[in-house]
Image (cartoon, one colour):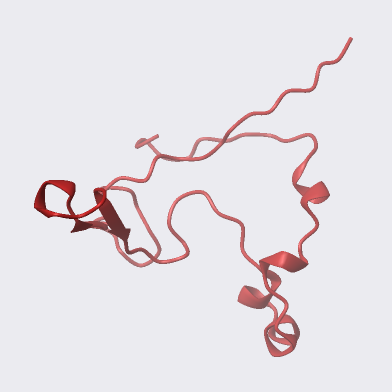
Length: 95
């Protein structure tokens, strides 16, 4: 019997989502830059946010000086370490 399953722990991106050093939340983060009803080929949005928005995983270069100096980004992380047992703890009321 296979008991493995994928559990998405992502939070929804929204204007009141708490983000690093912005206690009021993300704020206006989506700008419509092209409109089909104004001659554009589609409705196109531009998203602006810091990398610490929502559910994310920090690259080694974010917190290790030697990783930053060598340019090791998120691509240095093996996806296999993201799989396995976990314990989920909800510590906020906005989820």
